[in-house]
Amino acid sequence: MGIKTYRPLTAGLRHRTGLTYDELTGDAPYKPLLEPRPKSGGRNNKGHLSTRHRGGGNKRLYRRIDFRRDKLEIPGQVETIEYDPNRSSFIALIKYRDGERRYILAPQGLQAGQIVLASDGVVDIVAGNATRLRHIPLGTVIHNVELHKNAGGQICRTAGAGAQILSKEGDWAQVRLPSSEIRKVELDCRATIGQVGNLDHQNVSIGKAGRSRWRGWRPHVRGTAMNPIDHPHGGGEGKAKGGRHPVSPEGIPTKGFKTRANKRTSVFIVRRRSK
Image (cartoon, rainbow, N blue to C red):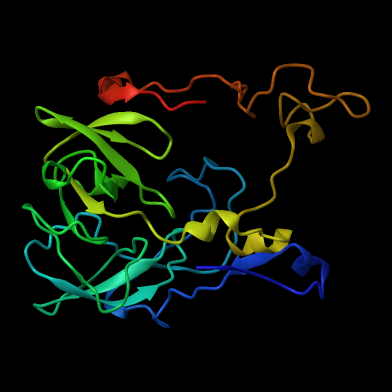
């Protein structure tokens, strides 16, 4: 996958870059796996604003992704590698021998025509195959890792993400996540072999404000530019600096303040991510 630049015919094109999409082989998504995705505008079920800077954007259809990888012992062939507007990674359409089709996350190196297999036993260490952690060798790069048995992959699903199995002891494996955090995961949890594809996603430059609006992101306004009623940093004469340590609109410190409150799962974290 490469990055393409544009001739500066307009101000918006001057710094804009985009993906070349060389890996993609499909033009249209598989319709039976599509479903509508209504927009929330950042509002919760009570209509209250719960996520700022959301709204507008192009209409999208959701692609149902097989995060569980529970189609066991049935080989599947990769039909197409496709773009998914709902995530940073690409997706692969798999056609199994019994005729069923499913979408999976496309790992780096996966190509159309390749055979992938999900199993609870030993599988070849090839990108796209899925099995339980107890059957994956130490040092293997994995993604779409389950945190609970048969619950479906929850971590390492974004473009370029990959975790690594460091050790196994008893019923647990120690997995190093992309953030450098080391976490204990049950050996009976499934994971997919390989690193998630579309590594160049992080190198794309948006180039102009309108391109963010296409994605459904509204403008981000600095707190110091607001009035006192709108933000703790607002108000003051002239160009004020806020007058206090940086906080969110709700008054929560934003730099270095620990917000993790889920002590129930802290026992699974062997080493916290480095700053």
